[in-house]
Length: 399
Image (spheres, rainbow, N blue to C red):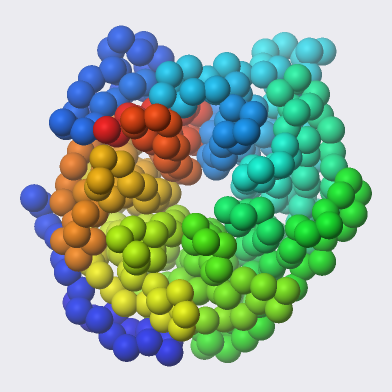
């Protein structure tokens, strides 16, 4: 297989072929070892009918999950992710049942600040809005808005850099072919309550993709551990943009994927001195792994795997979220397979030749996937959005 690049040379591809989901909250039934290194801990039936994008604040031991059905962000106490025991926090005692935090629209994504007690949410309504809320208040079942700022048109993803300095937003601008999709970057330095952030657009995106501006639709964001650059999937363009972060953000390169790949989730990590990018290619039921050069921001294809062969079901698999992490001296990728209600764990110790480690049955339609290092293990959490089915959270331990 051959993949072409913008500003990049083609690289040889590696294709890996083949080497009853549980929707219950019964931990004793779910807790089972699936491989020597992987154990399914639990699928938890979270309040509400959907859990899509999740983020974790280690500082406060809070897990956040967006819910597009009830248009809220659910906050849950989770001091130790390895316990797989989230405790939902009721944010409105005047209504029946557990209520999340209402932000005045549909929250499509949420990201906790790595060191400060607040979270950033991308919210859609009549326009796109950045809403920043206080996590200390959320932990008490209260809503305290720090900033509510109109930005963009139809926001799809938001991310905060690991050093806390940059906020990156994917403005998909969906629904109107005349509106330009954009990637927006702002510095958080000097950020205080009520002070608007200054967002700068990444120039030249549409031209680099060879598409009219109104056809560009950025989808999902990953930021490298050193906060130098971001990878942004452009789903309708079958591409991933590599963006140099700064007060004047710039386009480093475009990774062109096979036709119909429709990339969704992306994630970046550093392993063995290399920057590794994982991409969930929803349209072609594949996942690809690239090495990104931090200086030039060029990327080289290491491997592409067939997710349907490895852990799918039926004619469609739809890989959605991906999380890369290191555990026990090994590099892993956790990939949510939406149509199969499963999470695939790949051993990427050799990223050029991924090996299937485990297939884990989770809830209905896993969307967001994160990995949290806790002590001697890593806890992988998938947000199982339902639709159809109930919204759930699944917990997987990797040793």
